[in-house]
Image (cartoon, rainbow over all chains, first blue to last red; front, top):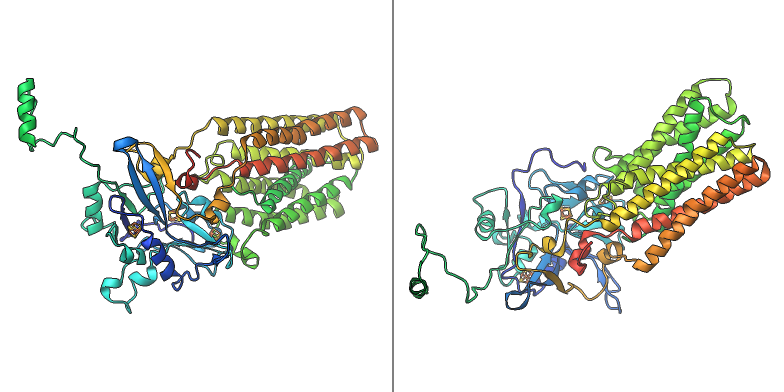
Length: 245
Length: 315
Ligand code: SF4
Ligand code: SF4
Ligand code: SF4
């Protein structure tokens, strides 16, 4: 059924990705590829893998961006994968029922046995999270490692998405974003986690944490809570700066 | 967006076919069919041929063609599924309608069925258009003129086909010729309006909103994830040079509207007979060719938000 669940999911499992600490090592992307080569969506076909123009299915791709100019500019590494949206048009456009959003945890999946490979879902995803497997003729996408996170043959500590397990800097967090007390929700609240392309109203579950801004020399340290200081004279301003160091 | 030839042929051919069926249905319902009793059934067969070759061609780009029947199951949420359902309901209804028209001329039931044929034809083209119009990541399709464009172009090309068939079996009336001209004028007007609208429009999304890094400043791509091509770039990254697009828009207008209008005017002046029919079939051929170019552009000029992650400054 490609209608979205009527009730918002009790649990909304997803990722929180810290753009401050991501170093762009691609470990999450390769680890994702490695796990899913043998996971429920296997294989992640590579075309011409050893040839001149290798091209294949990846569920997670790490981009690099530059934002801002000069000293205030930043280089930001940016992993991009399915955000398991609440308002997932990739699901509702699917004519066959192959695409679906799970009511119990909000994970968006493709049933490859039903997929006719019409590609419409990939057009409907603003984030480019769906990838067509040309060899198999079906659409594939990030499963949030549904075959790891509920996998009782794995040790409890390993029941996390492969990308989260692989990240050497701890930039990837996995948890329940519907639970306000969860670690991921607290992280989003504390760091100002944001949605990608909020204007399209897909309401992604995954959140991104902004890079922390460098304290520039001109930055004024915050005043102690409760007292608003407005030094009148140049001298008092100087005293204020001196004691604020 | 990558223009898939099978889908381009499908939307143009089935559009003309449904346009023709729509007109035949209404003519039957209001007792306006041409005098020659074989004219309308022949037009109907021609329409069915356009529709069915179109529908078959639309399955060619599927990864799993034999599973195509599954596409009728999700009509509650999916416009693609609704299109499939409407097309499958419409075919037997149209066949029954044509049968009645050809072999049961005295009976009245098929005239009433004409209304159903007209409605189903209009709804099918509407569903096709909504597949595109409902996609928010592609502002060139998510445009208020997408649906009127599909409907009017289907009707105009169906109108030219109807006139050509009528002329082949007898002659065309002044009223039907003028209606054809009016449809052509409306078609080019909506298409030009659409082009103006997409040229002036701005996407709501930008590299800044796509990455959420706008607070730091302007966002530029530094490096792609991989050095080689991938599915996203092949499917969503298709680009047509602005210069070519301008030229092709001109070709679409000349072939799709100007040539058919002139040929139709000529046919009206000639009155009837072989020359008039020839002019109208030329009009139809030019129009379908023009619409193929128009439809190719509809895909090739459309930009998808995913390209914001691949260095596009705007989409
Ligand atoms: S990111 Fe794309 S594929 Fe994933 S749920 Fe959202 S719209 Fe669907
Ligand atoms: S490609 Fe498969 S999953 Fe995607 S919309 Fe078509 S049938 Fe559904
Ligand atoms: S593994 Fe971690 S640090 Fe490396 S690219 Fe992925 S998110 Fe960034």
